[in-house]
Image (cartoon, rainbow, N blue to C red; front, side, top):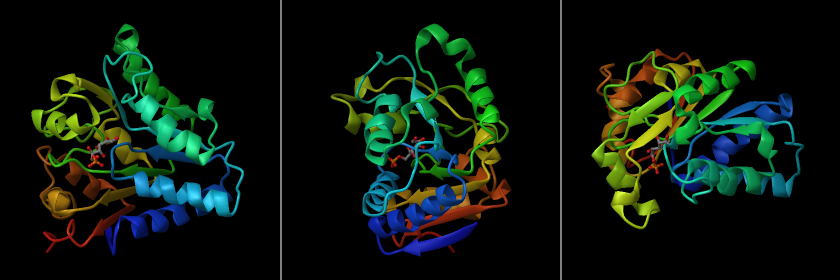
Length: 242
Ligand code: F6R
C-alpha cells in the first residue's frame, strides 16, 4: 500500500476529495464506495465544499455503502441509510436513487446480501472504495474471523464494536447485535481502496493492516491482496508502522 501521512483530518479530506472530484470529472457516472462512521466525514465535507465553490454535475454519480445495521426500524436516524442520506447524499447533492445501502430490514434479510452483490455487479463495480477501520481491525463490519473471500452477508457485531458505536445511540443496549456488510471479497473487488484512520486508537489496527501478517484475525490485512491501496493517516495512526 501507498501510505500518506497527513497533518490532520481536514488535510486528508481535501486530498481525497480532490482525487474523487477528478474521478467524477473524467467519469460522471463514477461508482463510489461509501463508508459511514466518523472517519470519512472530512472527505464528505471537503467534497461538499469543493462542489459549492466550483459546481460539478454529480447527478449521475452512483454509490454503494459498506454496511447497515440489521433490524433498526425504517427511518431510524442512526441507520446507515439515514446517515448516508444526511452526511453524503444531501450535502453533496447526489441523486438519492443512485445511492445504495444494504437492506437491513428483517423481512428481506435472507436475500439482501445476494441482491446487494448483484446490484454492485450491475453497476460495473466500485471505482473507489473509501474505508475506515475499527479498533478490532474490521473493514466494513467484517470483524475478526471474516474470510478474505466473503461477500455481502449478515454478521454479528463484536462487543468492542458495539461499545465503540454506542456513542451514536442513547444507550449501548440499543446498538443492534447484527449487521449486513459487504464482505472482504466484495471490498477487494473495488478498483481502488482508500483507507483512512486518525488518532492513536487506530495505530494497532493500521500497523496490522499495512504490515501484516495477513490473517483473518486482522481483517484489515486483506488490503495486502489488493494492487491499488492508498492509506491516509495522521501521525498518531501511523505511529506503530515500522
Ligand atoms: C463504516 C464501517 C466501519 C467504520 C469503522 C471505523 O461504514 O464500515 O468499518 O469505518 O468502524 O469507525 P469510525 O470511523 O467511526 O472510527
